[in-house]
Structure formats: C-alpha cells, structure tokens
Image (cartoon, rainbow, N blue to C red; front, side, top):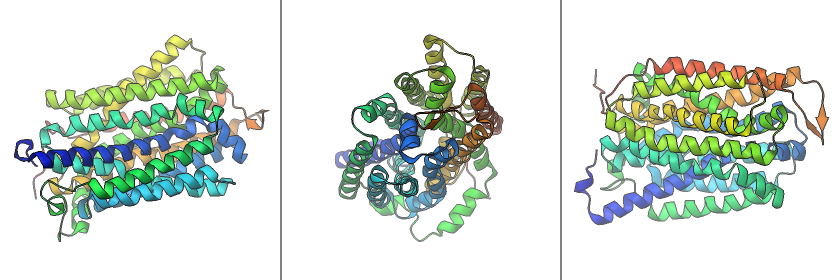
Length: 425
C-alpha cells in the first residue's frame, strides 16, 4: 500500500483528480439506480405497464450491473481504472439518451440495460483507486466518504427529479444526464492515472487473473459479506429505489412530492451514515460489531411498516431517517472483503461482495411487483394500477425476510481489526 508521505506533490494532485472523476461516475450510477422511484407513475403511464413490468424496467439496470461486477473487478485489476471509466461513461451516456427518447417499453429496457452496463464500473474503479493510492488504514473512511458523495445522486433523484419531471419532462432529464456521462468519460481519459508510479503498480501484469479470481471465490471469508449485501443492500435498494414512493402514495395517501422527500431523507441519512461508519470502524479497529448491530436495528424497523398503519409526517420522516442511518452498516463489507484477500486482488474481492447488493435488488424489485399483482383488485386511476396497503404488505414482508438473512450473515463476517489478514496457504 502506498504511503501518503512518499508521494510527490504532482502525484497527490493526480490521485485526487482520479478519485474525484471516479466518484463523479459513481454519483451518476446512484442517480440512475433510484431515479425510477421518483418517476414511477410517469413510466407506468408512458409505457402502459403493470407493477411487475415496472419492476422489470427498474431491475434491468440491476441485472446487467450485477453481471458486470466481477468482470469489472477483473478489468480494474488488469486494465486499470482509466480505461474502464472512459468506456463506461460513453456507454452510459448512449444508454441514457436511448432511455430518454424511448418510444416503447422494449426500447426503454434496452436503454436502461446500456445505462447499467456503463455505470457498473464507477464504484469498483473508486475502490481500486483508493486501494492503490492511499494507505490501508484509511480505506473504510475513504469508502464512507465516497458513499456519502455518491448518495447525493439519490437525493437529486428524489424530490428534485419529481419536480423536474412535473415542470419539464423526465425524458429531457435523462438526455441532460447523458451529457454529463460523456464529459466524465472524456476527462477520465485525459486525467485519470492508475497508480502513483505508472499503471503497472495498479495492475496484475502477467499474473493470471483467472487464478486470482479463483483465489477470491474459494476464500470462505469472502462470502458472508456477499450474503449480507444480498439481504441488506438488496432490500434497501428495492424499497428506496423503486417501491417506497408508490407505497407511500397509494397505501398512505401521501403526495408524490412528499413521498419523494421521504426517499431523499432516507438516502441523505444513508449518506451521512456512510460518512461516519467507515471512520468510526477505522478508529475502533472493529468491523463486525458495527455491521451486526446496524443490521439488527434495520430489520426491526421493517416491523413498523408491515401493518400499513397510517403514520404522521413527523414519525414517517423519522423512520426513514433512522433506517437510512443504520442501513449504512453493510458498506463495511467492502473493507472486510479487501482485508481477507490478497492486496493485489482488491478489485476482484470488492466486486464479488458488491454483486450481492445488486443481485438482491435485481431479484426483489420484480418479485415484489409480482406479489402485488397477484392480490391486485383491478383498481385503476388515470391509466395506472392502484394497489392497496394489503397488496404492498406482501412485498414488504419479502423485503424484510431478505433483510433478516443479511443480518444473520453479518454474524459470520471475519473480524479483521481493520488490517489485511490474508495468509497464503
């Protein structure tokens, strides 16, 4: 791991610029991830789709994002962050334009697939740059900072996006976001540097990436973080990324603007939690206790939503805020994955556990919609299906079940005491 004191002033500037562009790409990734929640009624009306169809449209992003996580980790360890950030930005920009102009549901799915493919590199590229440019003792703190900044995307994708969709058009918003992706791609090609002493420092070189991937996959200490992310991260993104807004609107009678504000509070508090939990973990020298305690509180809060009892604004905002804070516990999984695997394989290790987050969301988003459609009474309003609190309860129970599995997995995470503990056999 590179020492900060050993870097020259130009190298310090290069690492800040490189990490800044990677985080900007990650910010756009998070925006695309949760944007369907704020414009769910617009999408349902534009493409005349059911809850299950809407779930598939939103989850398409997660399908390709999930499939790309391990390949992205391999590419980060072999090609370096510069190349994958440039290519990812170009693909995401093209997909965002196609989604914004989509005349049909099928074209929208293709556009969202391309978006998921393009933005899938941002977070892993960020983790790789932190791993090669910064000392090990700062990893969780910097990851928390990255998550904090990245979650500005969901905040923007909440109430402001709902307002923009009402004032102008959701299609125009996605075309504008495409332009941002192209700019990030161009700047990444020019300014991102893969390592403090050239690209060779950050890559595997001639070492077999297949052997490295097998090493990560065969390491039993890799998998508790994966399952924790599957349950905790998957339920979090399924709820906040799609179903929270329509749930609050239809089951609790809240306006779209107010429902979107709730989601913005959720993500803002999640961002704040990410900012502090990494630093707290680094200072305490512990990972597992923070993950387990946060996960237990998160599961308990799902019990409040299951009955579907109407809540006052003050209480509902408080619940969303606290859930956001404790949900951040699963973000320590990336530090744990890096610390139980060979340092050179940090990209692959973090990408494998990261798969769990998006696999969970990819499975849950359409499955929740399918459960809701099974009990739907046939009610319609302005061409959009209307679901009751009972319809949503089935989906909420499923997301809570995933969260409980995630909590159980945190109990098996290996305690690293915030240092790399991998030893060759």
